[in-house]
Image 1 (cartoon, rainbow, N blue to C red):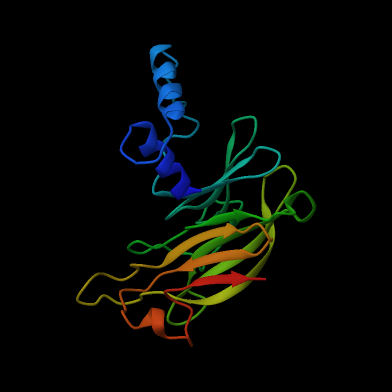
Image 2 (image 1 turned 90 degrees about the horizontal axis):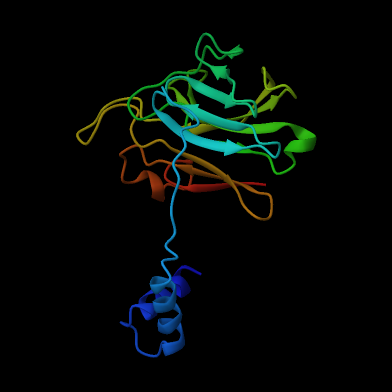
Length: 212
């Protein structure tokens, strides 16, 4: 689809051989009519510190992460509540921390959220020594006031716990979470500034992981 879109756009401006004059004519008519697309900007959240990712639930709540704060939610009525992470959250996680580029990163909503209430969070943790990155699953209550039933589903994603010649501790953790069309959870993990880590099949860093 990306390739098709590029060809089509280039064809409209007349730089790709083989594109039809009909496409050029349609574009010219749209330009003459003044039918120019416009964008409207609306601020829905401000005052954030290190925002990293967001995900919408089926009923319109907005889950979002801040690197050194944790997981929060903007409810449909516009109120914001800190669900999980540092002290002051509905559920404080003493093992959660932020360092360098690392902290609360990706958040994903389970495809069956209406039934399971599952959300997934990528975070560093001191439960292991040295610390690791991990993906935790949480259950959000119907009122979006708290979370429960924490389950660490992938606890051993490498974390850069010491500086080296190319950067400081906490760098290159990765951390994006997304569900694919077949319902599998995909996790991106960082290389920790270690060039051999992506090639090391015994460790989870520098990879794209799939959780069935």
